[in-house]
Length: 239
Image 1 (cartoon, rainbow, N blue to C red):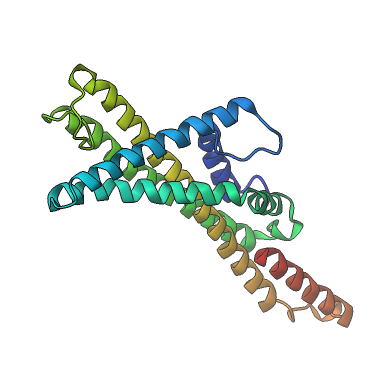
Image 2 (cartoon, helix red, strand yellow):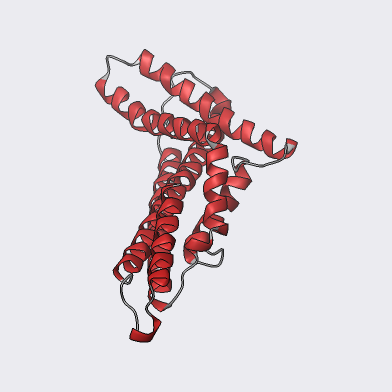
């Protein structure tokens, strides 16, 4: 996939946000990036631990248990996604390199460009809808909790007294961090799947056109060449 296509633009958009939190993989060590990544991960991990404490304390109270599980499950899913993403960074770099440099991914002709453009536009639309929904949910958490008696967006049994707003800031920071990075990680998966779908559609068209020749252009060598191109294209998609 050429770097100027909409799908690659969507990946670059996600990369900017993951770079802010320090989770975008780097080929060279960056202390500042590693520090941001550590703080981001630590805030989510501590937030997850406090929620587990609440679950243990209120395990017999179905209402409190359901409220805590609704948040804790999402944070746990984010932590797992992030760990897998970091452990598989080498494979991730290989996929990005193939997307950016593979000649077979470059669209040739108007039909192929339309396939790639349409899929890119759909990925960007899904990204906007998904991120918009997450933004609304996080905003509601922030606003509604301030108007409640507990102040905190997620219940915590310990009495903080005048420090309750410090806990509010911590919880909201952890929630926003988890929500933003979850959106980014999910959208990376959507972009990769969108790339595969677009390239499979292009490959299908190539296979369909294998035997379409003008009478004067046909030759067994040209037919074999087209077949080899389809095989190489399919191999790049599988990678």
